[in-house]
Length: 330
Image (cartoon, rainbow, N blue to C red; front, side, top):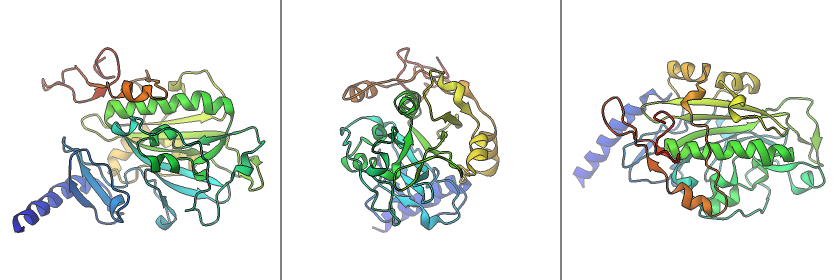
Protein backbone atom coordinates (compact mmCIF):
# COMPACT_ATOMS: atom_id res chain seq x y z
CA UNK A 1 0.00 0.00 0.00
CA UNK A 2 2.87 2.34 0.83
CA UNK A 3 4.37 1.63 -2.58
CA UNK A 4 1.10 2.50 -4.32
CA UNK A 5 0.92 5.77 -2.42
CA UNK A 6 4.46 6.59 -3.49
CA UNK A 7 3.63 5.88 -7.12
CA UNK A 8 0.52 8.07 -6.96
CA UNK A 9 2.50 10.85 -5.28
CA UNK A 10 5.05 10.59 -8.06
CA UNK A 11 2.28 10.93 -10.67
CA UNK A 12 1.01 14.04 -8.92
CA UNK A 13 4.45 15.67 -8.83
CA UNK A 14 5.28 14.77 -12.43
CA UNK A 15 2.02 15.80 -14.04
CA UNK A 16 1.65 18.77 -11.73
CA UNK A 17 4.93 20.03 -13.16
CA UNK A 18 3.68 19.50 -16.71
CA UNK A 19 0.61 21.58 -15.97
CA UNK A 20 2.46 24.25 -14.04
CA UNK A 21 2.18 26.44 -17.12
CA UNK A 22 -1.57 26.67 -16.45
CA UNK A 23 -2.41 29.61 -14.23
CA UNK A 24 -3.35 28.20 -10.85
CA UNK A 25 -6.75 29.83 -10.53
CA UNK A 26 -8.74 26.65 -9.99
CA UNK A 27 -9.08 24.15 -7.14
CA UNK A 28 -6.28 21.57 -6.73
CA UNK A 29 -6.26 18.91 -9.43
CA UNK A 30 -6.69 15.21 -8.97
CA UNK A 31 -4.55 12.97 -11.16
CA UNK A 32 -6.17 9.81 -12.45
CA UNK A 33 -3.85 7.35 -14.24
CA UNK A 34 -6.23 5.61 -16.61
CA UNK A 35 -6.81 4.51 -20.18
CA UNK A 36 -9.24 6.52 -22.29
CA UNK A 37 -11.30 7.60 -19.29
CA UNK A 38 -13.84 10.43 -19.55
CA UNK A 39 -14.24 12.85 -16.65
CA UNK A 40 -16.52 11.33 -14.03
CA UNK A 41 -18.98 14.15 -13.61
CA UNK A 42 -20.83 12.33 -10.85
CA UNK A 43 -17.91 13.07 -8.54
CA UNK A 44 -17.61 16.36 -6.70
CA UNK A 45 -13.97 16.52 -7.76
CA UNK A 46 -14.59 15.48 -11.34
CA UNK A 47 -14.21 18.94 -12.87
CA UNK A 48 -10.78 19.22 -11.27
CA UNK A 49 -9.44 16.02 -12.77
CA UNK A 50 -6.67 15.42 -15.25
CA UNK A 51 -7.22 12.30 -17.31
CA UNK A 52 -4.10 10.54 -18.54
CA UNK A 53 -4.72 8.44 -21.63
CA UNK A 54 -2.66 5.55 -22.86
CA UNK A 55 -0.59 8.08 -24.84
CA UNK A 56 -0.06 10.09 -21.63
CA UNK A 57 -1.87 13.11 -22.99
CA UNK A 58 -2.16 15.60 -20.13
CA UNK A 59 -4.71 18.39 -20.28
CA UNK A 60 -4.94 21.32 -17.91
CA UNK A 61 -8.18 21.41 -15.94
CA UNK A 62 -10.70 24.07 -16.88
CA UNK A 63 -8.74 24.96 -20.00
CA UNK A 64 -11.99 25.67 -21.86
CA UNK A 65 -13.46 28.02 -19.23
CA UNK A 66 -13.23 31.75 -20.12
CA UNK A 67 -12.06 34.19 -17.45
CA UNK A 68 -15.00 34.92 -15.15
CA UNK A 69 -15.17 37.47 -12.33
CA UNK A 70 -17.50 35.38 -10.20
CA UNK A 71 -16.68 31.72 -10.73
CA UNK A 72 -19.63 30.70 -8.55
CA UNK A 73 -21.92 31.93 -11.33
CA UNK A 74 -20.60 29.23 -13.70
CA UNK A 75 -23.06 26.39 -14.18
CA UNK A 76 -21.63 22.91 -14.71
CA UNK A 77 -23.55 20.21 -16.51
CA UNK A 78 -22.27 16.74 -17.30
CA UNK A 79 -20.50 17.58 -20.54
CA UNK A 80 -20.47 21.36 -20.76
CA UNK A 81 -20.31 24.50 -18.64
CA UNK A 82 -22.01 27.83 -19.19
CA UNK A 83 -22.39 31.39 -17.99
CA UNK A 84 -25.98 32.59 -18.19
CA UNK A 85 -27.27 36.07 -18.95
CA UNK A 86 -30.57 36.83 -17.25
CA UNK A 87 -30.82 40.05 -19.27
CA UNK A 88 -30.72 38.19 -22.59
CA UNK A 89 -32.20 34.86 -21.34
CA UNK A 90 -29.49 32.71 -22.90
CA UNK A 91 -25.91 31.69 -22.30
CA UNK A 92 -23.09 34.18 -22.75
CA UNK A 93 -20.83 31.22 -23.43
CA UNK A 94 -20.95 27.44 -23.51
CA UNK A 95 -17.64 25.63 -23.01
CA UNK A 96 -16.63 21.99 -23.26
CA UNK A 97 -13.95 19.58 -24.37
CA UNK A 98 -14.86 17.36 -27.33
CA UNK A 99 -12.86 14.17 -27.77
CA UNK A 100 -12.72 11.90 -30.78
CA UNK A 101 -14.47 9.14 -28.81
CA UNK A 102 -17.38 11.44 -28.02
CA UNK A 103 -18.11 12.02 -31.70
CA UNK A 104 -19.29 8.40 -31.99
CA UNK A 105 -23.05 8.55 -31.74
CA UNK A 106 -24.59 6.25 -29.14
CA UNK A 107 -27.92 7.93 -28.41
CA UNK A 108 -30.50 9.52 -30.71
CA UNK A 109 -31.73 13.09 -30.34
CA UNK A 110 -34.31 13.44 -27.61
CA UNK A 111 -35.87 16.60 -29.12
CA UNK A 112 -37.32 17.21 -25.67
CA UNK A 113 -36.61 20.86 -24.93
CA UNK A 114 -36.76 21.56 -21.20
CA UNK A 115 -36.12 24.40 -18.76
CA UNK A 116 -32.68 24.27 -17.18
CA UNK A 117 -33.20 23.50 -13.48
CA UNK A 118 -29.78 24.99 -12.65
CA UNK A 119 -30.85 28.50 -13.70
CA UNK A 120 -32.22 29.82 -10.42
CA UNK A 121 -33.87 32.85 -12.02
CA UNK A 122 -35.52 30.67 -14.66
CA UNK A 123 -34.40 30.13 -18.24
CA UNK A 124 -36.29 30.70 -21.47
CA UNK A 125 -39.23 28.41 -22.19
CA UNK A 126 -41.06 26.94 -25.16
CA UNK A 127 -43.49 29.87 -25.06
CA UNK A 128 -40.66 32.23 -26.01
CA UNK A 129 -39.98 30.42 -29.28
CA UNK A 130 -43.48 29.34 -30.30
CA UNK A 131 -44.59 31.33 -33.33
CA UNK A 132 -41.42 33.45 -33.31
CA UNK A 133 -40.11 32.19 -36.65
CA UNK A 134 -36.75 31.36 -35.07
CA UNK A 135 -35.22 27.96 -34.42
CA UNK A 136 -34.28 26.86 -30.94
CA UNK A 137 -30.66 26.75 -32.03
CA UNK A 138 -28.20 24.66 -30.05
CA UNK A 139 -25.00 26.35 -28.89
CA UNK A 140 -23.45 23.04 -27.85
CA UNK A 141 -24.77 20.74 -30.61
CA UNK A 142 -26.76 17.65 -29.68
CA UNK A 143 -24.46 15.58 -31.90
CA UNK A 144 -21.51 16.56 -29.68
CA UNK A 145 -23.43 15.26 -26.68
CA UNK A 146 -24.74 11.98 -28.10
CA UNK A 147 -22.25 9.80 -26.21
CA UNK A 148 -24.57 9.33 -23.23
CA UNK A 149 -28.27 9.57 -22.55
CA UNK A 150 -27.77 12.19 -19.84
CA UNK A 151 -25.56 14.45 -21.94
CA UNK A 152 -28.02 14.22 -24.81
CA UNK A 153 -30.91 15.24 -22.55
CA UNK A 154 -28.93 18.13 -21.06
CA UNK A 155 -28.10 19.43 -24.53
CA UNK A 156 -31.80 20.28 -24.89
CA UNK A 157 -31.88 22.63 -21.90
CA UNK A 158 -33.19 26.05 -22.93
CA UNK A 159 -30.02 27.54 -21.46
CA UNK A 160 -28.24 25.89 -24.41
CA UNK A 161 -30.64 27.46 -26.92
CA UNK A 162 -30.54 30.77 -28.76
CA UNK A 163 -32.95 32.22 -31.37
CA UNK A 164 -31.37 31.36 -34.70
CA UNK A 165 -32.55 32.12 -38.20
CA UNK A 166 -33.70 28.84 -39.74
CA UNK A 167 -31.40 29.11 -42.75
CA UNK A 168 -28.48 29.85 -40.41
CA UNK A 169 -29.16 27.04 -37.94
CA UNK A 170 -29.78 24.41 -40.61
CA UNK A 171 -27.10 25.71 -42.96
CA UNK A 172 -23.79 27.40 -42.22
CA UNK A 173 -23.97 26.82 -38.42
CA UNK A 174 -24.64 23.11 -38.94
CA UNK A 175 -21.71 22.90 -41.35
CA UNK A 176 -19.42 24.47 -38.77
CA UNK A 177 -20.59 21.98 -36.14
CA UNK A 178 -19.81 19.10 -38.51
CA UNK A 179 -16.40 20.56 -39.25
CA UNK A 180 -15.61 20.85 -35.53
CA UNK A 181 -16.45 17.17 -35.02
CA UNK A 182 -14.13 16.23 -37.88
CA UNK A 183 -11.37 18.27 -36.27
CA UNK A 184 -12.00 16.59 -32.91
CA UNK A 185 -11.43 13.22 -34.58
CA UNK A 186 -8.37 14.41 -36.46
CA UNK A 187 -6.76 16.04 -33.43
CA UNK A 188 -8.12 13.59 -30.80
CA UNK A 189 -9.67 16.41 -28.77
CA UNK A 190 -10.63 20.07 -28.98
CA UNK A 191 -11.55 22.73 -26.44
CA UNK A 192 -14.68 24.51 -27.66
CA UNK A 193 -16.24 27.78 -26.52
CA UNK A 194 -19.29 29.06 -28.35
CA UNK A 195 -22.15 31.49 -27.94
CA UNK A 196 -24.00 34.57 -29.18
CA UNK A 197 -22.54 38.06 -29.43
CA UNK A 198 -24.81 39.95 -27.03
CA UNK A 199 -25.32 43.68 -26.71
CA UNK A 200 -28.00 46.16 -25.73
CA UNK A 201 -30.70 47.07 -28.22
CA UNK A 202 -31.20 43.61 -29.72
CA UNK A 203 -34.68 42.61 -30.84
CA UNK A 204 -36.43 40.11 -28.57
CA UNK A 205 -38.96 37.29 -28.73
CA UNK A 206 -41.42 35.76 -26.29
CA UNK A 207 -42.78 36.73 -22.88
CA UNK A 208 -39.29 36.47 -21.37
CA UNK A 209 -37.80 38.86 -23.93
CA UNK A 210 -35.16 36.50 -25.26
CA UNK A 211 -32.62 38.53 -27.24
CA UNK A 212 -32.09 37.67 -30.91
CA UNK A 213 -28.33 37.89 -31.62
CA UNK A 214 -27.05 39.32 -34.89
CA UNK A 215 -23.87 37.21 -34.74
CA UNK A 216 -22.56 34.01 -33.20
CA UNK A 217 -19.01 33.00 -32.37
CA UNK A 218 -17.05 29.82 -31.86
CA UNK A 219 -13.44 29.53 -30.69
CA UNK A 220 -11.41 26.33 -30.78
CA UNK A 221 -8.16 25.21 -29.20
CA UNK A 222 -6.20 22.11 -30.17
CA UNK A 223 -3.81 21.70 -27.25
CA UNK A 224 -2.14 18.51 -28.46
CA UNK A 225 1.54 18.30 -29.28
CA UNK A 226 3.37 19.01 -31.43
CA UNK A 227 1.23 21.56 -33.28
CA UNK A 228 -0.85 23.51 -30.77
CA UNK A 229 -3.25 25.74 -32.67
CA UNK A 230 -6.35 27.86 -32.22
CA UNK A 231 -8.95 29.53 -34.40
CA UNK A 232 -12.08 31.65 -34.08
CA UNK A 233 -15.27 32.16 -36.09
CA UNK A 234 -17.81 34.97 -36.26
CA UNK A 235 -20.90 34.28 -38.39
CA UNK A 236 -23.99 36.46 -38.97
CA UNK A 237 -27.32 35.02 -37.86
CA UNK A 238 -28.52 34.47 -41.42
CA UNK A 239 -28.17 31.95 -44.19
CA UNK A 240 -24.93 31.87 -46.16
CA UNK A 241 -23.35 29.77 -48.89
CA UNK A 242 -19.88 31.19 -48.32
CA UNK A 243 -16.97 28.93 -47.40
CA UNK A 244 -16.53 28.47 -43.67
CA UNK A 245 -12.92 29.61 -43.94
CA UNK A 246 -14.18 33.06 -44.92
CA UNK A 247 -15.65 33.46 -41.42
CA UNK A 248 -12.44 32.47 -39.65
CA UNK A 249 -10.92 35.19 -37.46
CA UNK A 250 -8.33 35.48 -34.74
CA UNK A 251 -9.46 34.77 -31.19
CA UNK A 252 -8.42 38.31 -30.31
CA UNK A 253 -11.10 39.53 -32.73
CA UNK A 254 -13.74 37.43 -30.99
CA UNK A 255 -12.58 38.73 -27.61
CA UNK A 256 -12.85 42.30 -28.86
CA UNK A 257 -16.48 41.82 -29.93
CA UNK A 258 -17.62 39.77 -26.95
CA UNK A 259 -15.58 41.29 -24.12
CA UNK A 260 -14.56 37.77 -23.07
CA UNK A 261 -11.11 36.39 -22.31
CA UNK A 262 -10.72 32.91 -23.77
CA UNK A 263 -8.29 30.23 -22.60
CA UNK A 264 -6.85 32.31 -19.73
CA UNK A 265 -5.08 29.25 -18.30
CA UNK A 266 -2.63 29.21 -21.20
CA UNK A 267 0.82 30.62 -20.44
CA UNK A 268 0.67 34.33 -21.31
CA UNK A 269 3.21 34.19 -24.12
CA UNK A 270 1.54 31.19 -25.69
CA UNK A 271 -1.92 32.71 -25.31
CA UNK A 272 -0.82 35.94 -26.99
CA UNK A 273 0.78 34.07 -29.88
CA UNK A 274 -2.16 31.72 -30.50
CA UNK A 275 -4.90 34.33 -30.17
CA UNK A 276 -3.38 37.23 -32.06
CA UNK A 277 -2.94 35.39 -35.36
CA UNK A 278 -4.94 33.08 -37.56
CA UNK A 279 -3.61 30.08 -39.49
CA UNK A 280 -6.29 28.69 -41.77
CA UNK A 281 -3.78 26.34 -43.43
CA UNK A 282 -3.24 24.64 -40.06
CA UNK A 283 -6.73 23.13 -40.28
CA UNK A 284 -8.33 20.68 -42.70
CA UNK A 285 -11.42 22.20 -44.28
CA UNK A 286 -13.04 19.05 -45.64
CA UNK A 287 -15.65 18.07 -43.09
CA UNK A 288 -16.99 14.57 -42.83
CA UNK A 289 -20.77 14.93 -42.79
CA UNK A 290 -22.32 11.73 -41.47
CA UNK A 291 -25.88 11.74 -40.25
CA UNK A 292 -27.95 9.45 -38.08
CA UNK A 293 -26.41 6.09 -37.33
CA UNK A 294 -23.99 6.49 -40.23
CA UNK A 295 -22.03 8.73 -37.94
CA UNK A 296 -20.81 5.87 -35.79
CA UNK A 297 -19.55 3.71 -38.64
CA UNK A 298 -17.90 6.51 -40.58
CA UNK A 299 -16.21 8.24 -37.71
CA UNK A 300 -15.04 5.02 -36.11
CA UNK A 301 -13.19 4.31 -39.38
CA UNK A 302 -10.77 7.16 -38.74
CA UNK A 303 -7.18 6.02 -39.16
CA UNK A 304 -3.78 7.16 -38.02
CA UNK A 305 -2.15 9.54 -40.48
CA UNK A 306 0.28 7.81 -42.85
CA UNK A 307 2.58 10.83 -42.89
CA UNK A 308 6.13 10.73 -41.55
CA UNK A 309 7.34 13.41 -39.14
CA UNK A 310 10.71 15.17 -39.26
CA UNK A 311 11.91 12.72 -36.60
CA UNK A 312 11.16 9.83 -38.94
CA UNK A 313 8.18 8.52 -36.97
CA UNK A 314 4.61 8.08 -38.12
CA UNK A 315 2.32 11.06 -37.48
CA UNK A 316 0.04 10.42 -34.47
CA UNK A 317 -2.93 12.40 -35.74
CA UNK A 318 -6.13 10.61 -36.64
CA UNK A 319 -7.82 11.47 -39.93
CA UNK A 320 -11.07 10.86 -41.76
CA UNK A 321 -9.60 11.93 -45.11
CA UNK A 322 -9.80 9.15 -47.73
CA UNK A 323 -6.15 9.82 -48.60
CA UNK A 324 -5.08 8.53 -45.19
CA UNK A 325 -3.20 11.75 -44.43
CA UNK A 326 -3.96 14.57 -41.96
CA UNK A 327 -4.15 18.23 -42.98
CA UNK A 328 -0.40 18.75 -42.58
CA UNK A 329 0.70 15.72 -44.60
CA UNK A 330 -2.08 15.79 -47.21
